[in-house]
Length: 484
Image (cartoon, rainbow, N blue to C red):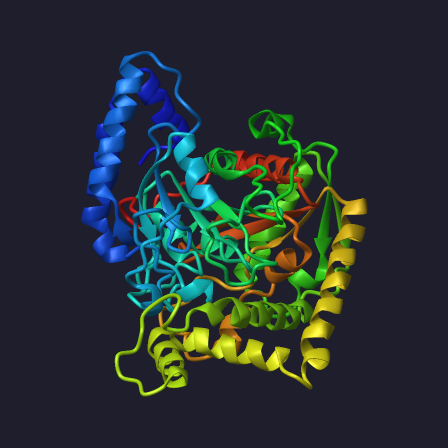
């Protein structure tokens, strides 16, 4: 399909109308999404009505806003007024929010046209989008494989050409993991750069909304569409926002790159390791200074992450009790039985597992042993990243140590599934930004992602590196291409 720039230029030059563009994307979704299953809900009639209004603006010569006329998809945990927001959970299968998330409001204020809501792991718990209560999403590059998670629907939709921009949420890698598996660009912004108001929470101190795009420039449009201070979010930061499009023109010459030894050790797929090492040489050729160093929290951070995220999840999901939110069990004889039955019927296995883990970690007698220690360790993670960014402009790694795996391959082995998050979770613990950019393909033609990690609010530097690599590699990222 089209890049954001191609759509914007085509609309401005009146090569096609907004209605034509929106209808073309909707038709592609209706034709091809039967295979992928990226969308839970399509918003056809309203999207076309909004497209008609954009065409009226163009006809009258009005200036177009940043996302004017662009079809946009939202992960189904981002609230949309009047449009179902399910979190891919049975407990919220009929929930229609009475308000828009701040990210939704900003997309609409900038002219974006929301065309639908995208599948995900239930309440964003998972790395494969196999934990949805409704259906599994498939990887456009190989329909027998997972798209990654939890924002698998959002990444698959961009990869398959169903939308030029989509949004997901990243708690421990949930934007970067599916971006890597699906061969698209995905950014986890600095904590506080994008408002979390209206993002249905998994772990409030870790969650962050992030954009997907087919290219780095498309991802920039996505970030500029939702970033900025929001008084409705107490963790939102009021910072000066750079012009990312001007920044990427500067290149990476003279910038310092740290390569952690721990990210290239035991357990990483040989093809991934070679591809990332080859790309590090490209960065060096482009003028970046490369230095190997030790970042000794790679494995340990995973344990702290799952204690903290599960503890926060058990607290956040306490509101789904059959009374205030969500479905209500029909057969019960007491208030306690109503809560137990409603939660038992409404939550899937992974959600129940994490609620149990989080409740245990917060319980009397275990709080100090687990949760408190995890929080102390989190401070150490922040300090290690602070020290790293005193020396380096970015830290580089593979996004994942493994290639996209088969559907059903890891779903019954939670520990093996959790280990796939090894290279991504520490970024969320530290609150720093990271971007996954396509780095090449395996021998089987499966996408490989490369991760650039930056200091807080250094998205401009990340985009410079991602763009420089993208321009050198010039990868063909069309999974539908004949012969594939």
